[in-house]
Image (cartoon, rainbow, N blue to C red; front, side, top):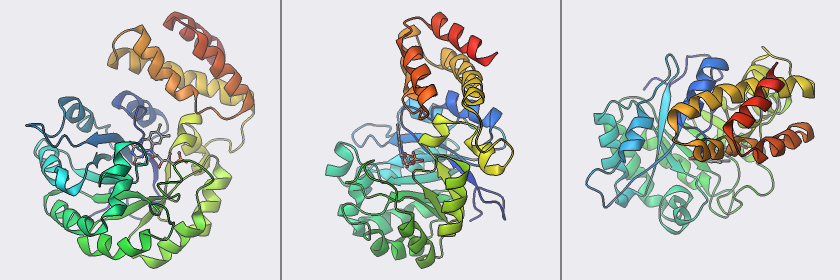
Length: 318
Ligand SMILES: Cc1cc2nc3c(=O)[nH]c(=O)nc-3n(C[C@H](O)[C@H](O)[C@H](O)COP(=O)(O)O)c2cc1C
């Protein structure tokens, strides 16, 4: 199956992030920094519903951006109907599917879905084999290195290969680690060495220097950028060498202000009501990392009216 990126390219992907990578945000990134691959937020399988995928998830899954492959991520357990839900998505025109095998939150770890799939590795291969027969485009898995032990993934690697998936995205932390500590890219390197599948490295890549270090250390086929790309959308350009790798704080703030103005316009079309739009926008501020931007983010977050936020953004963007 052809990969969802051009041969010879080291793709930079925008990670799936629940609450963030909705169609409005994806479209801003697609129009500006053009990630090589986009992901939806996870689509949760609804095992007891007549239609397993919610209408709002169909809408998200079909909102592609011209020229950029959109991978729809599905979360659920093998016996909860991941295959049936994927069939529904494919029937509506979805091309690329990714299975979430890493979510560390709530229900996902107590049942056999998300990171909980590590509790029942035997169910993984038959599920992926079935998915392979129905997914017309690429089939991939996004995973962590294990549930509690960062070597658990090595036991499942052969199943990924024999089921015929196309690539693997690895956030090199364990599920139980959640976001503590740091991503262990020495393990990413070992995974790359031990599988024939293209591996996309993910975790704690926040600047161009880290990106280049992870690529050279691991030999990964590409990178997936999450929080770093929310904190600095131009991270894609910095890694590609088309924007300053270490811009001054004032430049970062100006760039971020114009990005947030675009996002504000997109969110105003997608979400309903001032409170919801502001709440969605605030979800991006919490990822700011530099002291200046954090301070500014806190000030933005205190504005109660959209007009007040827009005014601050217009001022900072000019
Ligand atoms: C707010 C938030 C929501 C996330 N939602 C998802 C999700 O829906 N699916 C998924 O596979 N990973 C999800 N993740 C994990 C990210 O895709 C990524 O693996 C993780 O943040 C590590 O990469 P980073 O250090 O570049 O952020 C989420 C992470 C964050 C911070």
